Length: 273
Image (tube, rainbow, N blue to C red):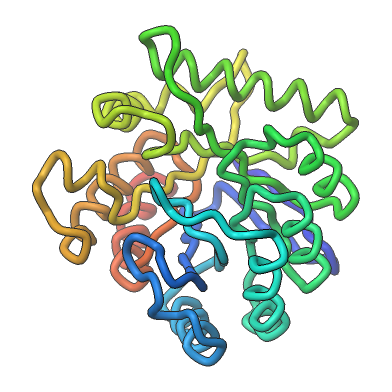
């Protein structure tokens, strides 16, 4: 089903016509896969430019690592890292999402030119909903809680329902929400794999179709199942992304955009014609 997300400046993000590729830009010294590689302004801008040239439809910029046991930084430090880079990214011609769970960081990033909020804490801080409403920004809401019912799909759906209810209570347009099942966040590896197998069950919620993004690129869930090291997980990432796309996922968030762009172009010919 085609869905149009309105962005500021009269631009649009169209879901449903093709699989959308989100390219990962970590401006951190400690991210699990590429920490430190794009920490400088020039390196970050050059990498973002390359991601777009490789086929990225969205650039997702994060200034604080969300890997397990990563150092927590202040909002001021996060903003400091972003404000050096975000203005230049506006010229790339694709939407920019800000990967943060801090409302004050999201607000400043949107002021600086970001278009979308990517909150791995799923709008649990209700102030984030107010930020999204103020800027009329689409939101990617990620599940991050531990399973409590022995059925991870059921738990994720409950979380999605709560997120929608919170947004409706604060008069935020719930059609502007994209959900992320949060692979690797608050889950056992068995639960991660169960979600991946059953991800099609998340495409509908109480009779309504929802938009889904999957972020599994190079994650430990792959290493756990295969033994592949972080730098040797791109093909496995691609396999999981194609599986998810065939089950209805709309957006995949990846490091290796060039490889996934070819894979997505091919699979879209099969399932979206």
